[in-house]
Length: 113
Length: 114
Image (cartoon, rainbow over all chains, first blue to last red; front, side, top):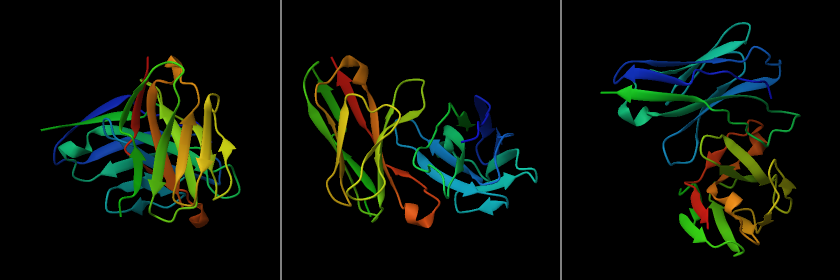
């Protein structure tokens, strides 16, 4: 799995968009970008994943740069309940060892009232 | 759907005692996992079961055993607990048949070994 780099912490005002960056400059062509989050004392929660194209679901949007060396997770209207540690993971899905998720230290997003 | 459930939520053991952590999922997923999370560290994979009837070691399997009882249930056993096994244990499951392996996690078991 490619190494990912994320800021240690970020703040966001409630109701505003939260943009969480992730650098994965050594990502290979068959590695997907996954985002998970972990709210305090809970199990991690899957958010979204993508390969090349931008993706959107009911929770968030994922923007991947054209060279795939970085991505941004966007929470369009952050709420206090979005305060959590957000993890960016680059992972081969098909044909590789896809069982282990390597969680780094992630970004602690604090949403302020 | 309850998703992934784990029992117990909390447990305190003395060194040398044994216990089994239970995990069940109702999403018909083929793969299941056990992770541990220590303060200030990411999750580390202990064991996983790619499909019913198979189990494999992860990063930190020493001191643990697992049983994939059926498609729904995957248990983790500590035969002789040690203080180093004080941690939060998470079970997860995924449908690797889709190829994408989004993992769904349970609420965790907080284990303290004295």
